[in-house]
Length: 463
Image 1 (tube, rainbow, N blue to C red):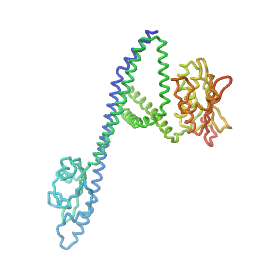
Image 2: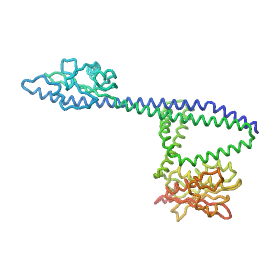
Image 3: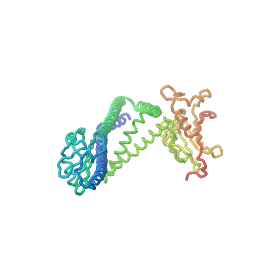
Image 4: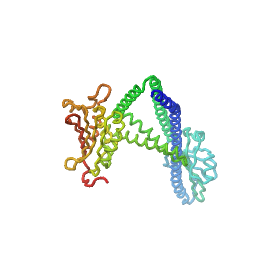
């Protein structure tokens, strides 16, 4: 038996040898997709600025055309002055407006400053409404040394000639905003990737040490260590309530992972195996996102995301979540899910978590060979749905019965409980406008009862 256990451990070590590289590759892939998405956003932003300058050039061209038309009506029209044509036109410090009079090569501003610009000439020659200027070209026009965007338009004033209008604006603020967003993205990805690799490295290192120790132990010792690890994981789950701040920071990179996985799925046409793996990533990330959002709402005191639930389905799902723990402990779990009950309105994940905590407490209270029954029915004349968890364990003394739902109070031996399971369950039930009550059973054991109101006006059960 010990030889088979050692062989299984070696196989586990082999499977983990490529895990570090896969995590690093995943981080790099997400970073590349994030930068690609940032480039697309930057291009879209510049396109919006181009459209804005093109529209502004058209509006200024209309103003110039009306003023030229007024000059055409004079008996002896004089050559229009640039400053007069651009009177009252203000586009800000990081932009300038210029006109090119008929027959001249230079564009001139309202102050009389002239400049020559090949990109503007080419744009007007091709009858385009906008163009982009490089950093040196923008600097030559005394604009910030950043990419600039120019909008152009032409005014045909008849005998006064053809006037070209140019509105040139620096895209420095937009580019700086894109750069800052890119650095924030990179910082978030680097931080998240570093944490993933760090904790992954610690986990792999801890597992290797554990496997080295397990090779020197008997099969019974291996089973004992696995039980201790399961207990630690159970305490870690209950501590999620205290980690709401961490969950808030996880939400952003998790949404990036989910989005990038969707993009990868769209590209994997004909690759069923990898598409199935990506689909699993999407499913699990959606489940993680739901749990994170539920605990964040719970921690903030917000109203839960309520949906119409079948009490019998809730019983079945909660029992499935903890079934392996009962099997491990040698405790029999009997779940009775009566169909045809009135529906309740609740957050599925939070309600299942509360009921799972009650079931795990009942399991811990029982000796091997004990039993726990889990049932649901109607109470208070059909106005409430009642979930009952009955165990035949050691029970709780009347003196402690009122304190067991207090945070960090536990009747379990030192190192086996955090004192948060019942506290979390009690708070979840409260935010669903329900009650949680504990009472002794005869001759031994404890009953935990959760009562939730049925849907107002719900006369029909869920089909």
